[in-house]
Image (cartoon, rainbow, N blue to C red; front, side):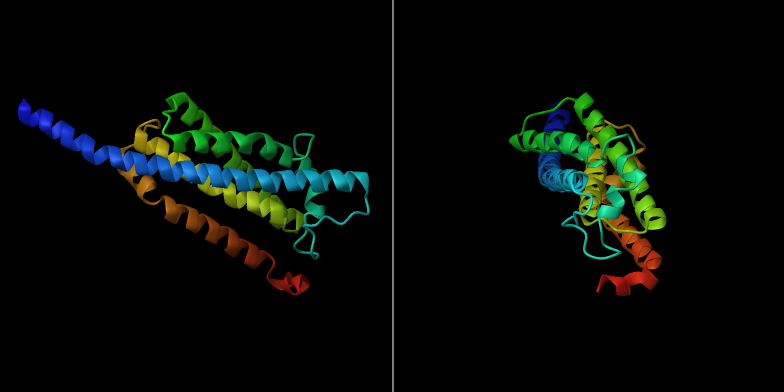
Length: 211
């Protein structure tokens, strides 16, 4: 019995520091990534308001026929739910930032909160994937601030999912859990590369317009 108890203590001593490191990484990622996403979303809202006030206004994120946010904002995809899409980011990213700050303080958040955050992050990842396809293949323009939001949303989703898997908040086979948790950085990198490759291929014959 004493040996078993000692083994249990040793296991805790090994596991707990790993969990603290995991929540620290996630906390910083949520705080920084959420702040970046919130700022980009706020800038899009400001530019959209200015464009509504003056139809001849050229948004600060419009540089050329390819890299331009004006064309994207004025499309129907830019207001999918009847209001500018960035409003969603302005409302959602502060929650992400708050979760990150709370996590960094060491406070323990309940399972339902992490699952709710994961659900929201999943919805965000699906939404930005749809926006990516619309921007690249239908609108034919790249919105810089939109791409910043994409870049912030992807790691938020991947690392939140990894944390929930590691803590057992999300149930999954051990092999799958380890694969996702151990490959979070790789998943984000591959995701970014796929986006970059698809953009390069689609705009290959139009890159001269950028310069």
